[in-house]
Length: 195
Image (cartoon, rainbow, N blue to C red; front, side, top):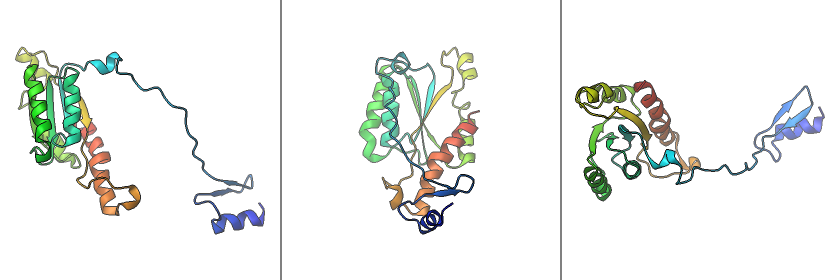
């Protein structure tokens, strides 16, 4: 390896991420390339047009994003929606969306339940999942009651930390961890509790 290459690497000239490989004597620098566009599912795809019969659990369900996701599911035929949030109460700013969702479900004979759970806390999620049988929301109970719903068929994880939108560079470590706990840890907790 040339001394100039080593000095450039140590000085950080021009590159923020670089590595030196002794075997080849070369400087390695990561590069991002624009990938070719991938085709997205079109609105005519059957998988998007209809949803399976059963209940959909929507985290962040009492906020705007969760309510919009639930409305989208109902528009595709969902008849069972479980809105999950930390507080359980509808965000006052989203009362109109909640009324639309409730009305749409009523019009097609569906059911709407609000449940309380902190998705960042496994015990809270696990307790909420254990509560589903008491509400008659499992496949076994639905069959015993003569219902045709197979129970929980899907999860939409729309929960978010109540920080508003911040670029990653603007977030403090505690703000980042709050988002991480709700989004990443919350997704894992939902997965683990519903297995």
